[in-house]
Image 1: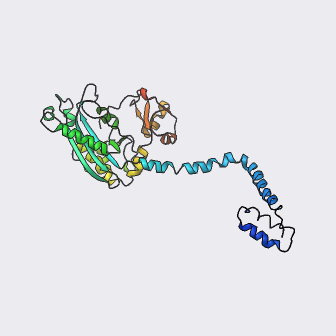
Image 2: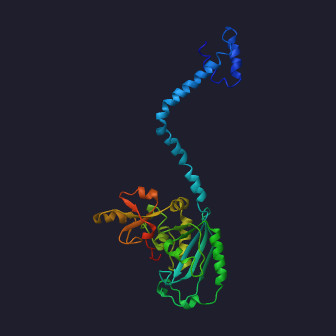
Image 3: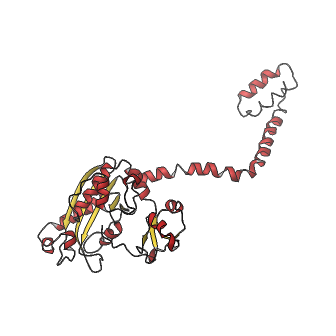
Length: 319
């Protein structure tokens, strides 16, 4: 009966244990002394020290598991907090491919609410130009751009739409974003998502790695009735988003940080790079390259090398 008293001192920090000790005290009068109580209390302290010293060698192996398990859920809420609730779907029409020699002559924009899959506002306006060498592509006559219209009002509304958005979506964003901050168009300080490069569309849609707006729309059952006007292409993307049940997941993955990677493959293995969505000579001259997140790069079946940002050239291919 004296040995069961050993576990009692462990919780001796609580006053109730002293009362139980007094009850056990009645038969033997020598045991109720206060001196034995501190001694057993010191005994439990030694085992924890001994037990702790034994697993110390195991701690480096067991500690990473709880840490990683605790760290894994944390990025999810953080990513959810960064999840854009409103998108500004944007497209431009230009007189050529380079801002140094050409200009933007049309802007189309749609403010889109992700949760409700709804269009909130849309805008399209022309910017005046003297000539349009790309008229055969976009169908915009230079004379039409010079017809009097409230351009300044349209620009102010466009700035309000940008301010209301959490992110900007464009098909071939590398091409569209280069026209903002110059030539009278405001700079856009929002994250950009490329619906051609950044969004990994579901495999069941059977799309190319970098699909055109037309192919993307048709894969989601969106009728294609016109092409190469800014607002028209924005409408196609908005209607795709309306039909996209996994839009939140696609946007979250699209916002992962990306770097340009170069495939390290022999010439006879170039088909592997092409199948993985790498493009030859664009945007990295003389190489198979593609923008990837670290997660995507690690999942490839061949070696890739990050490319310094100053080694690439902008993608001039029009959407």
